[in-house]
Image (tube, rainbow, N blue to C red):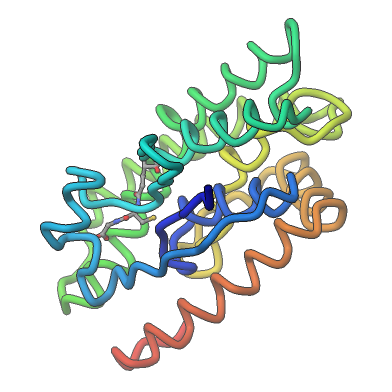
Length: 221
Ligand SMILES: N[C@@H](CCC(=O)N[C@@H](CS)C(=O)NCC(=O)O)C(=O)O
């Protein structure tokens, strides 16, 4: 049975899954969903994921949305060290949950303020942007301290937590997230780019897709 993964290569959430699947050598069919054409909002797609968001995985009768859940499913399927055993497993899960609740959410809001609104010709809201940047810096200080003596989020080996927490770097050139104020975060992300070929490849795909798509709106970054 072929695994199908629905997504748009311009999506940072799809990139988390694409990276993990490629890194684990799992074969799958990519079903393209063009977010700019609203293809995630059709009744057919919403039957798969009522939130109207990518990525979605279909493996026979199993349908999973939410990139972290998909990645856990894939890692368990092949018993991958991306989801380690014992205490490291819970450290991995802890950072995945932290990434969702305290980290990516602000990057998603900033994307909406600085890119989503620009596409619609709406000015960004300075109060909202100030709140997002303050929250980002508060949480970045925690991550920066955590990474001061670590190669990757959980230790010496890459785990799913790295892909989840690194995801906002996908749009950093466009959103201007202030991560460059945090040297240990920047050094960790560079290690990920240098040592995980799939992370680098999927960034190239994402940038290509974003640049082409936004050029159509007359937006360059
Ligand atoms: N919490 C979800 C977030 C997924 C998400 O935000 N997907 C965005 C693209 S990055 C999306 O599909 N948006 C739908 C749209 O723009 O219509 C996950 O981790 O998978």
